[in-house]
Length: 215
Ligand SMILES: C[S@@+](CC[C@H](N)C(=O)[O-])C[C@H]1O[C@@H](n2cnc3c(N)ncnc32)[C@H](O)[C@@H]1O
Image 1 (cartoon, protein in one colour):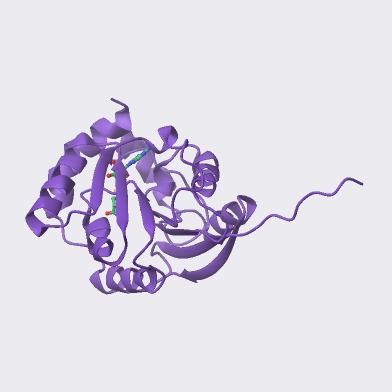
Image 2 (cartoon, helix red, strand yellow):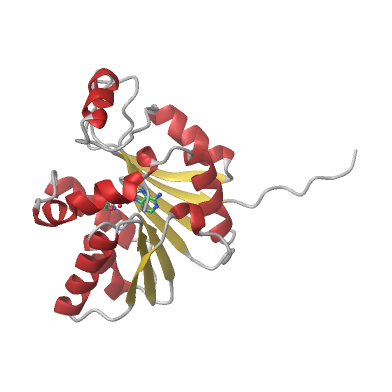
């Protein structure tokens, strides 16, 4: 098990019990996502945690494959699905770094509160692009901790991480993240930040790259 998986395993029970930090923003993000979902869609979620978001969207699509590196998170998510009687979600233990053979297999990929936790987010975003067909949707919500009001965290988080209180966290700005999406072949369809220090919600669409013609 990786350090990150061990960290999230330790925190899974607490994470499951903790109420959503900003309920109004969370519901709005669900609505913005729901507006794009169709009953025949196959959806993949990366870093699904205890499955709350996957379970909210499942009744509106054909299937959700929800993945996470923490066995404990997955266990809690499966229990929640069973209690809710929702059968079209499969919760699976998987690292984003190991996803990748089913190119173009999903109509939408969701990644909420995870891109800032990945040491190589560029590789992850490129992998997500491969999992989508042309016009496929990448829907994410990401804390962008550099540059703004949260810049001071850069000094506080390393010692907190050393004490095992927080996981490894990457620092980048809203502009950098949007540029990363575009570089990976996505067009930004919608972006919303509920407040200056809040996570950036983005709906991005995979666009067709113009074929290279020989000079
Ligand atoms: C901050 S939680 C977010 C959970 C959920 N998406 C949410 O919005 O509540 C981050 C989640 O990402 C998972 N995670 C971290 N690194 C991962 C990786 N490399 N591959 C898959 N999941 C990962 C953690 O186990 C944890 O459940």
